[in-house]
Amino acid sequence: MDGKIAVMLHEAPVSLSDFALAALSAVLVAKLLAGNTEMHRIRTWFCLEIGAVALAALLGGIAHGFVPDTETFWGALVWRSTLVCVGMAGLAAMMIASFLLFRPRTVERVRFAALLAFAVYCGLVLFEFQGFVVALIFYTPTAVLLFIAFLVRWRKEAASFALDGIIAMVLTFIAAGLQHFQVGIDPVYFNNNVIYHLLQGAAMIFLYRAGRRWLKHASQLQVQSV
Image 1 (cartoon, rainbow, N blue to C red):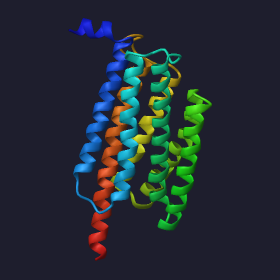
Image 2 (tube, one colour):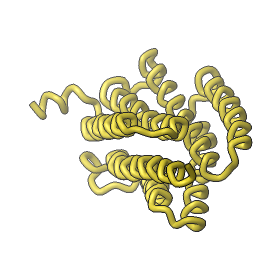
Image 3 (cartoon, rainbow, N blue to C red):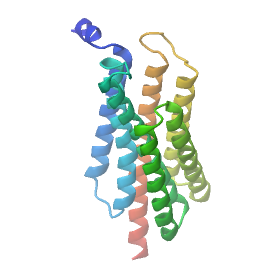
Image 4 (cartoon, rainbow, N blue to C red):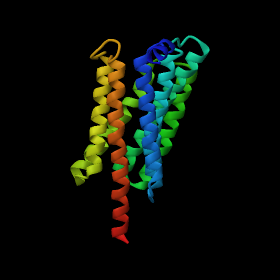
């Protein structure tokens, strides 16, 4: 059976690790949605952040396994959809950071600017530029902003959810660095892409913990203020 799967998939280890990351992230989104909370907007952005990773990983598994050639119609469609997912993750990261750093009125302004930036980004990656550098230019500043936001909250309150968020972002940066510099253990079974997926899976677990604990923390504060 394993041999048949390996034959079907163009890059079996990378594709399977992509699918595993997608499944893990989808489960984490479902767990977040299953919980009760009054902070629906914060939960929505956490779900979008993790859900974007799930969808990007699913598309990545399809690309690596079945349509590696981005010059074909299906290959181009999958690749451009993956770039849009990266943009969704950046949008969600920007909004989570704004809830951590700003007052509600400022959050609304950030939301308008973030949605506008995301719309421009989607136009670029769908019709003009399909290089991954465009996705990096959009996503990297939002990831750094989210890391700073968690760090500021942790230094201010030492909240456990903020520490989980910091760990999630550090793991994300390490994973991206190892992938960029093509650091792996084995050129086939544990190459830089597989290592990236494993570390990104760990990052999503910590980000889920951050979201769940933040929602619980916010609910407790609301009860105390009543």
